[in-house]
Length: 119
Image (cartoon, rainbow, N blue to C red; front, side, top):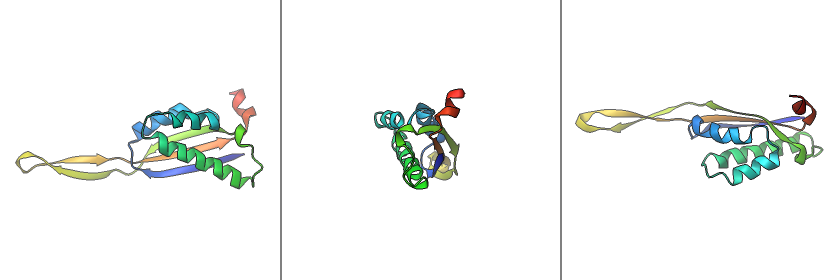
């Protein structure tokens, strides 16, 4: 059984979030949460909350019959969201553009360890 969770419009650059997502890809949920708890990157906190949300979705979807200890992070992907463009005044009446990037994070948890061991 698979469960998904999505985090839209995270106000953090996707390049920063994808480094944290690579740490937990393919790990068990318990190991992923432990890794993210002790990761000193700012992106670790929203990714940890997203994985916990996907765990709750799995429990709700299966009406409590899923074993949370067997869940693993099947896929976690980070896409670029919309960029907010701001302008900062510069010398001699000019202005330079500041790009405030956002991210979309998607996670899929599964308890099918048979399929993942074959790969």
